[in-house]
Image 1 (tube, one colour):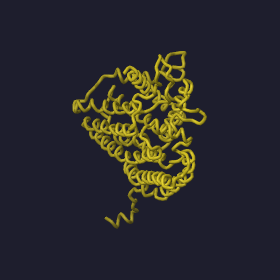
Image 2: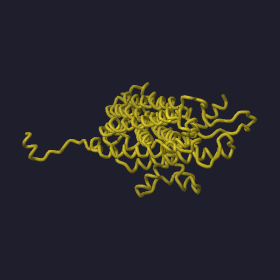
Image 3: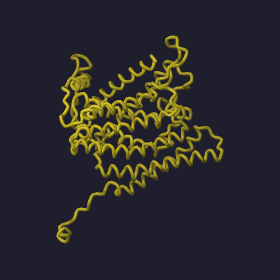
Image 4: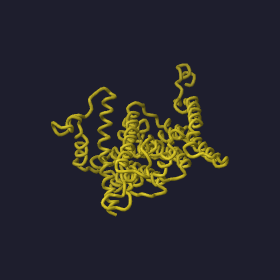
Amino acid sequence: MLEAIIKIGVLVGGLMTAAAYFVLLERRLCAWIQDRRGPNRVGVPMTPFRLWGLGQPLADGGKFILKEEYTPAHVDKRLYTLAPITILGAALAVFAVIPFGSVLPPDFLGRSEPIKLVVAPGVDVGMIYVFALSSIAVYGAILGGWASNNKYSFLGGLRSSAQLIAYELPLGLGILGVVAAAGSLNLEEIIRQQASSGVWFIFTQPLGFTVFVIAAFAEAARLPFDLPECEQELIGGYHTEYSGIRLLLFLVAEFLHMITAAFLIVILFLGGWHFWGLGSEDQVTWFGAALRVGVLTVKIVLVILFFMLVRWSWPRFRFDQLMAMAWKVMLPLGMVNFVAIAIADHLRGQLGFALDSSAWNAMLIVPQMLLCFVAWVLIAMAGSFVTDNRPRVLDPGEIDAQI
């Protein structure tokens, strides 16, 4: 019990700190891309906190917390308060089954068992747990939009529900390919399968990886999929009427969704904490465990940097384009990937290949790469069907004829 409480405290504190400083990182990255200076003034003088602006997240968080809690008179007060709590609670609960590294040796404080770096170890249906709790985020957005009693907030909630429900299907299909190949819903077992074969699933399932990453962008409501809160159309979306600490809960939950997506991408497709040359996981030492945690952290930070670069490099979709891509592109590609993986596993069982998992995965690399290439060629050929669906502009002669 004490071990679980300590893990939860470290996890929540680490996630909140990471979310705060990822905001600073994104602002500095945005400034670099736009050739200007980012936040670099707030901090303790004559220290790195002042030099790099590392005090900015503390100032921003303090501003939110100390700001007056104002509740508009026209809102549903109970749902208005429940919405940010729901979305943040679901975002934090997801991390209960996400492993943060290899196990630690049992020689700590006289323990006879190794310490697993996960809050709830041994959950065999961890992937279903993550998928179920991630889906709860839509309730927070809908509650916030409905309780605000504001038409812009309500439109943001409707957009959020349509977007998240539509992209959950290709997201699930991307996960199914990995689950079928690994034969397990346990996140640690999925990493162990990639480590034992030496081939990450990004190489054997590039199409599934592409579908999953695009769907993860949409599920995290990151640009170019931030239609539920795009300021040009909806002011602020479903949290227009929020301020103070309740708005802070919404904003932190959004960044936690991005961190969750980065964890899943790394665990499912990039080998988790596995890296060639780290040795056997069964004989891990303290140094080896720390090294694996470091490898996992570096991969996650790189994926998050990719999320941020896309935000400041890619224009936003129209909502009809976003929904058309979910149903007409991502869903068929996810089904193609899952069927291809199922056929490959069936052939392996029926033909009785005397191959270990590493040799079999190596054989799948070329066919999967070819399948991914063909699929994206077909997408490029049919791209106008999804993106170029604006109404045709009539010339003056046609307008006169219609009048």
